Image 1 (cartoon, rainbow, N blue to C red):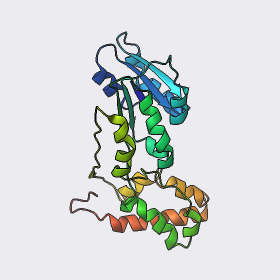
Image 2 (tube, one colour):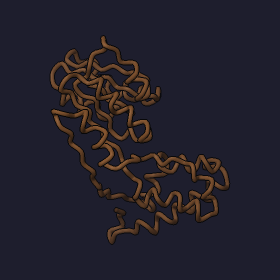
Image 3 (cartoon, rainbow, N blue to C red):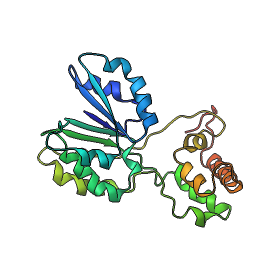
Length: 230
């Protein structure tokens, strides 16, 4: 099995458990810091004689391109909340390349957040426009899935025959706590590219943008009677 974009290794134990006795897992990430965290998180698992874990520093495309005829073909390629860092134009070639690396009958299991229409992300551009800086974030790519399920179906269904393709789009409700928890939740990964485009969080424009965004988010996600936020 391979965990693409493994991050801190949060899914490693679950994957090995699902794989059963003798399962092997390759954790792949482009960040050495994330790989280090994953190695620590899975250190005791890797010491088990029945389970082998190895770590590879590479991005998605480089990992797929590095596979050769002599490489062991995985039964499962898994990626949770990682492939959306690549745009859909990259997915058009990347996803078929990943599927081509699978063992016969193997599975590609991918989860990507789609925040294109969620207020938490739409209001990022609105906040910039509110303070007259909309043009400076016009070229910022939101970190999200960029295409609709029908686009992925058209891309992947022909490659999944005769085994079939399972595809679904789900809205999740999260119960958050704090003064402005949605703004806190998006403050790093989601908001970061916009803040960077405006000079960073220490700049006056960056700080004005963050303030405007937090105000818009507070209005868009009002408190429930018990003080929590959905």
